[in-house]
Image (cartoon, rainbow, N blue to C red; front, side, top):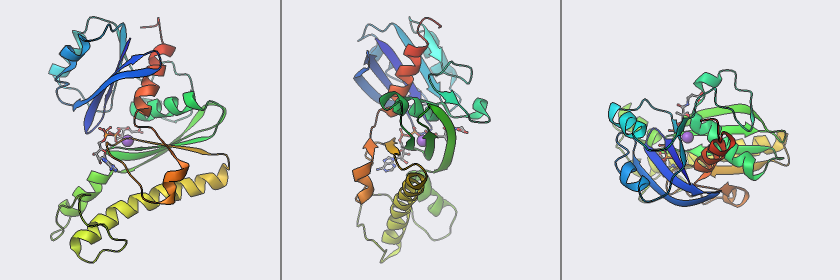
Length: 243
Ligand SMILES: Nc1ncnc2c1ncn2[C@@H]1O[C@H](COP(=O)(O)OP(=O)(O)O)[C@@H](O)[C@H]1O
Ligand SMILES: CC(C)(COP(=O)(O)O)[C@@H](O)C(=O)NCCC(=O)O
Ligand SMILES: [K+]
């Protein structure tokens, strides 16, 4: 079995794969990976992969180094099953690369837009020839709510829970709709303009824990919460024997 670790800016995701299937998954603090050891002792793990977009604490590094099987640390020199055209592969977020690999594995000969709505929202484009062209980075939902509060004198910290109106009727509903509709329009805008350029475009949406759209956008996307983990699993298998 494979151990897959995706350490994001908000959470670490730890998963076990048997072949191409997820057997178990847990979301953990990205500062401690608390249950790693106990979790690993449950399964006959043969190899693992770690992808992180943050600097890890000494404790986490020591816990990972103590694992009793080989671990592949994804970096810009890791061989990949897609062509990476990003001009600075050494600065590319590994979660972005993994999401692209996960989508390309499912539809290898299609043009794909991959949207990962986590701490940040990232937009990636990979073409039908398996070439990753790059993409964009914008603030995630919590970041938008927090920024409105933090960089103003009067705006409260609002979240997704509560009255949702198309146009706000008080400060709270104005902020909630502003952030959520803003994200929705941003995402549909990308989909629309990319579909115009690539009519056969497929769209994947991943990230976050309870992402939901109430618009027509929903009907044309593949929602796959595990896309990054699946991509990392593929990268690990692609590098089998090279660790
Ligand atoms: N319903 C949602 N819609 C959009 N974003 C969400 C939703 N729920 C959670 N998120 C975002 O997902 C982030 C956590 O998800 P995750 O993909 O694990 O982030 P990361 O990979 O950056 O650690 C939160 O910071 C939040 O902004
Ligand atoms: C863009 C990101 C912050 C997204 O991280 P996430 O929202 O998944 O925590 C991360 O992929 C990153 O740090 N990227 C480095 C810059 C780049 O990809 O070019
Ligand atoms: K992201």
